[in-house]
Amino acid sequence: MTTLSASVTTTDGTTITVPTAAAPLLIVGKVIKIDDELMVVTTKGSASTGQVGVSRGFGGSTASAHDAGAAVRVVSTAHIEGADSNDDHYQAPTLNYNYIQEITREARLSHIRKALKTYGEKGDPLDMEVERKMHEILLDMEGAAWEGLRAEPSSVSPGLMGGFLQYTPAAHVRALGGASFQREHMADALKTVYAATNGAQIPDTVFCNIWGAHKLTEIYGPGVGREQFTREANDRMGGMVVDTIVTEIGSIAKIIDPNMPADWIVLAKSKTIKFGPVPGLELGEYELNKTGTADARMIAGVYTSEWHEQYSRWIFTGISLTA
Image (cartoon, rainbow, N blue to C red; front, top):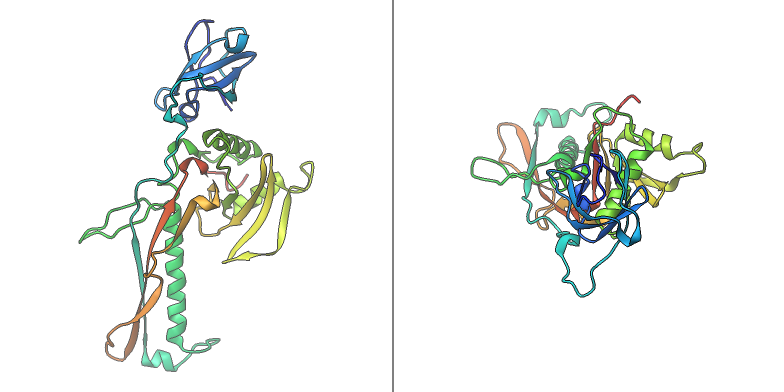
């Protein structure tokens, strides 16, 4: 659902204006309702102007004037019998390409440092340093998966894989500008994704940081009418906390990731995203030439990401971290 950006003052006009983010979702054949009037979309909404071509008084309803801010609700989709189909409903299964990204670290310890273990160390100190460096690489990979923008590698510049921001349409990125995240924000995003994908790609996962998790618990937890927040007995997977919230259109897994931007809340369908090592180039360690009395190892992994059904995702940025 969206709203009129400008009033409709005539009964025979053939365009309406809605917010530019919502306009492209109103495609040819969509039947919409404004107040008591039905209209059918005849020209797909423009992402630059927000204008949508319509046929007025559809189905015998009465064409009338409508105020700016009036709700615009999608009722159904209708196709002219015998007419050719249009490709407005089609969404590319994936964007056309991404790049790979190599992430490296070096672990180096002198023979004295290896011999004199610090308090609490167990095992080989160099092996422990390698484990720490591997963890740092995984955090770097995670950061690229959230905010990376693809960059082509060259002889003087490293490659960078694109992440959520790269592969989520601008119309599905909403900046709250420090406003408090509310239940209505989630509901509006889910409705928009439902309309954009014809109900086929509803998000089943919400990613958030610690504060986002607090807000989701606040608006979906006990005390809001019924129990809407559940926790699995084994709820820790890969260092992330997994819970389930029950929204107006179904259950969604909530994944708390302390390494994502603190002021983001992200909706996605899990099977449409994938990021990790390139097969055959997984995270590994390599012995380096000895320098002086120090032993050194290089730790490296090569990563990329795949993104399908771009309109199945939604990103909120700039949520309040205090309210």
